[in-house]
Image 1 (cartoon, one colour):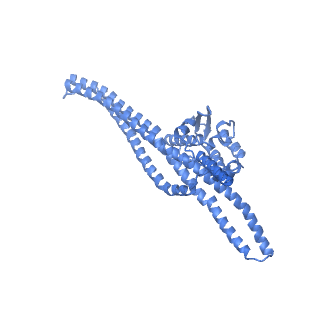
Image 2 (spheres, helix red, strand yellow):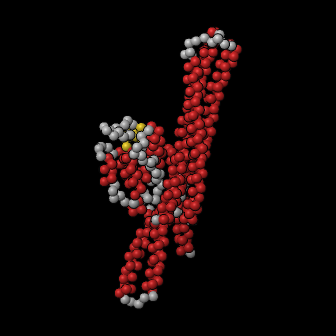
Image 3 (cartoon, helix red, strand yellow):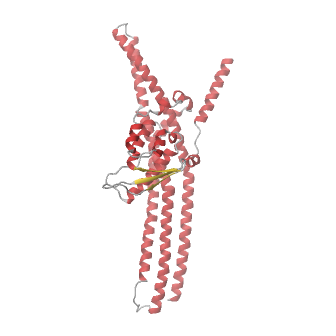
Length: 398
């Protein structure tokens, strides 16, 4: 009876611990934990100029400056240390493109990247992150590479690595396999959505450009110093005044479209790219585990079974002693692989909860998009109503 009671207690405690370990993180909690803003600083360099990025961290309450090339050793060190965590890709490198459009696109990408790192419950407090955010002085890249050249992988230093399997819910491995199969379709779907949102954004920018062009053309009529034989001097003067006022209002319409584009960029567009980058990184993580440590574990187990079976059929000899030593050495490798495999499963399970937390943002993103679009159309409606009133007055006068 005592044994049964102990077993039940252990099972209950393990279950409670697993529930705690599997707690879904609230996306508001993640967003409030850090806000990082990246802005383009002045270009530096005598012969070959490079772009500096000024970075502000709300959590650390500090501002610092980095080049794009400073991000590369930082990213490399993080990936060596956290091979089983979701780390989005850096925006692409370019040796020749330094156009304002490219720099702005990279700025947004770096901001999303740093926010993902800064909000990660595990990665954000690592000494690699602290060094990148706080270290000052010359030759930053060399010092960063040197300091973290031999950084240990997380599973070697994390105290939970030996009991990682206890913190993973039953059936997690199968569920992660299912997620892995579903991810390509999900990524493709969100990629299409992001593409259409980008099209809506471009449409707002084009509308703003067209309206500003129309306003400029209407203002240009005011500069025409001639009389109209068709309308007459007085009528022409009224027309020019009306076109001047209309031009101002049309410019306001263009401004409203421009504001709408900014809201779309900072809202749904940015959020979708952030989610897409996380999904892609998560898929790469799942694939990396399956092709890496999980595959190595299966292969080593298969060899071990084969050699143990072979040893059981051998008589005592030098050959059998060598095979026995080989099996013992492989047992040590198996222990290491087992720890890595179980810890990687635990990490990926935790990362899946972060992905789910970002999925939970979708409702708020859509709500924000609906609010932004409603506000934009209300402002446009008000401006068009004013323009209609000007047109009605002009019709009465001429």
